[in-house]
Length: 434
Image 1 (cartoon, helix red, strand yellow):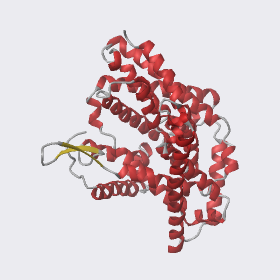
Image 2 (cartoon, one colour; image 1 turned 45 degrees about the horizontal axis):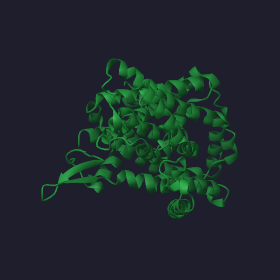
Image 3 (tube, one colour; image 1 turned 135 degrees about the vertical axis):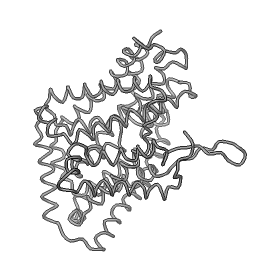
């Protein structure tokens, strides 16, 4: 929370984000000169993420801020752009990007994706206690504390967030009873480190050929899926009409509407009929959350529609429109990243960065051993750390048809989040200085 940014009206902020995305796409389309060299180093998707974070760091825009009312009382204010992008545009994008999916080719990706994802989970479980142990050597006060102020209790919420998501994070806060007055610092570490990790993954996408060569990866199953989708796109490609665009919009947002309605029905059903779903300490609490069901239903709807004649709307640009929604989501995520926050609590940020580095070391090591491509690393890592809101973003950066892979892996994370985080927390308690 900080003073109001220069622009507080979401209408203006959204226009600014769209302008930044437009500038990135215009410059990245240059086929020669400085811009060609620049985007050979920095992927366009990464820039769509970083530019809003710079504007947020300069307090031109902000996801949250405080204002004083007429009585001198502080009022918390928030931008709703990320909420709209994640609740409306993300499920719409998932439907449109899954519309042309070849389910058989998707299943042919094999077990490597799951193995790499689970290695990422292991990296987070082990990374926490190792990071605490390392920092305790030269700064024991950073990872120390006693009672409900013990830092390891607070770090449990990071483990929950990075393995599962928001529901798992809340469960860890409930289970280990960390002092909520200090909880804001943990949320800050979560946002900063998770966003740094995502930026690193997006940068790696621009170097994927080099990384795959080092991994000696077998990229054939991913390439086969991309080729099948590309061949289908070419076979149905046509000059879209206004009617085409209106029907694509109808497909996307009618599906979003159904996904939201279905998520409310299913979450209420599970909470009403299963006691363990109502228990915030249970892994099953995820099934009581509407976001989990909304993302799951949107993906299922897209897969079902891929078996109908509506699949042909891929030729009119369905996945391209889905990509527009994804880029807006990327910009809204970048807006949440305040680069100044790194200086607010450098000790805890360092714990988080070491933790994330260990996660990356383990996931890369496993991928190297089983010769898995960088796609599985990027999506497996983001499915752990970012969850269903950002894993499809990273997956679709490789190819729009791969967005559903990110969602499927993120769902595994929701289920594994609570128990993995509990194990990680007990290890951090052992590692913490007494």
